Amino acid sequence: MSTMVDLSPELERFAEGCVSSGRFGDMTEVLESALVMLRAAEARRAAFVASLEEARADTESHGYHTLEEVEAKLRTTVAGARSRRG
Image 1 (cartoon, rainbow, N blue to C red):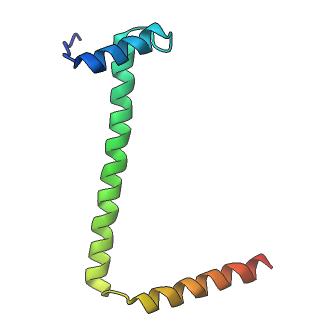
Image 2 (image 1 turned 90 degrees about the vertical axis):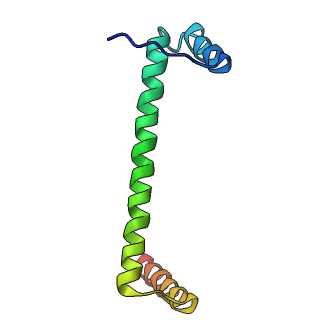
Image 3 (image 1 turned 45 degrees about the horizontal axis):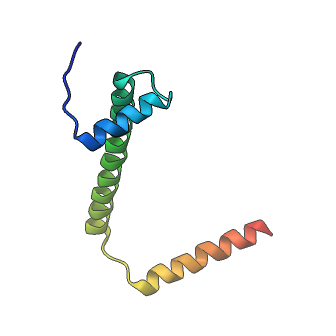
C-alpha cells in the first residue's frame, strides 16, 4: 500500500535526520514508528479517560469523602504498611 504524506518542513527535516543517523532505514520506518507510538499514547489516553469516568461513577454511587476522611484512611494504610514491614 502506498500513502502520500505531506509533512511540515520542520517534521520532514527531523524525519530525514532520523534516517541519516542510521536509526531508521527509510522514511517509511520513521512514520511507522511514529504511528506505533501514537497508537500507544492513544491507548494510554483512553485508559486514563476510562479511569476518570469510573472514578466519577464511583463517587456518584458512593458519595464524596471529606479531606479528614481521606487523611484518616491514609494514616491507617501507612501504619498498616509499617507494621507489616516490621
